Length: 141
Image 1 (tube, rainbow, N blue to C red):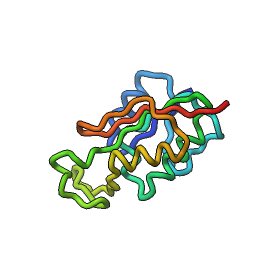
Image 2 (cartoon, helix red, strand yellow):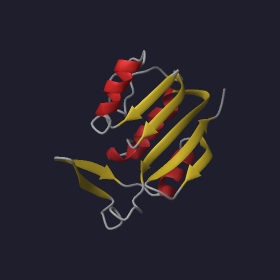
Image 3 (cartoon, helix red, strand yellow):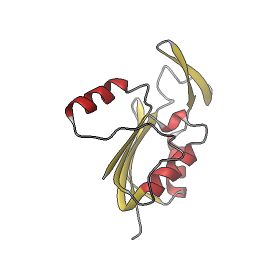
């Protein structure tokens, strides 16, 4: 079982593609209160979503909660070290199309600490580029 977490507004086009081409169930929900039971998913993909939360740790805790033991999550957040964000405040609003969107920039070191504090094993990570990327695994049985 697989869960894809994203900022819905950013990826509206993908919702249309998925609905038209794949047999998938799509729903919107609060990423800090994922409406599935504990240990439900084998995989979670979280693309450019956690940085929209005021408390990134809450989103990470939910990912951990819904993953089965041995399950993996691929997590990306925007990298504040991009030239367009380098001088932005840690918490800010960024113009996206016609709207201003909330961003809570989390550094590579901060996100790594949050993941480790939530008992994830980091399998791979990437610091350079537009996104910070982590492939993590939930331990246990």
